[in-house]
Image 1 (cartoon, rainbow, N blue to C red):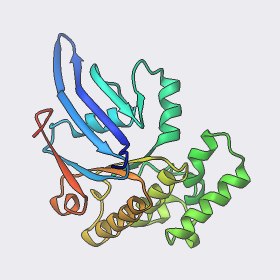
Image 2 (image 1 turned 90 degrees about the vertical axis):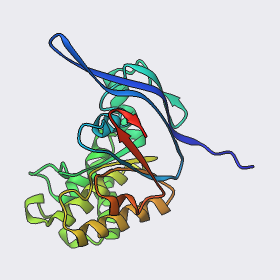
Image 3 (image 1 turned 135 degrees about the vertical axis):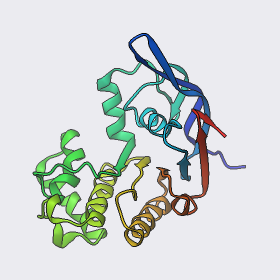
Length: 225
């Protein structure tokens, strides 16, 4: 039987937020295993804990209790510097609001993760251009985000997520700001990314989008149901 690598392994994950004297437990003991190369969606109503879970998976926030293994490494006692290094090495993010830098061109936005890795301008720009070409955006490389459509911005964001060759793609409502046709184009692109062997996790509230993934994880009141 072939060895199956777990990309994500969560055991008993809990997370609370404190406001004054009050605490709100958002995640209430999450157990979740995602195999390497899987494409899964996470669904749940507003306040179910989807965003908190995604932030913990992406090392943008830290859990209070439980165990998190990412690509076989224990995610505990991380400094902000170590977390940033792991994010840059292992994770690509795609956001609903694209999160592009407004004053940088499409090419410069895509190249940004390589800048943080200390890769020279010439190499990072060349790599960014190759990715933009693959995604049909070569002619838009020198355009600013304000000159791009929603679908083009999201493709730029996906190119940026891919440029450092991450093992895990986390997409937070990647189709939330797009019309139906463009949403399906973006999902086709994410499926192509998955076909290349990437693990893809998509937070969505849209059932038709979730149906395009291999399995759906439902969250309710901080628990998987």
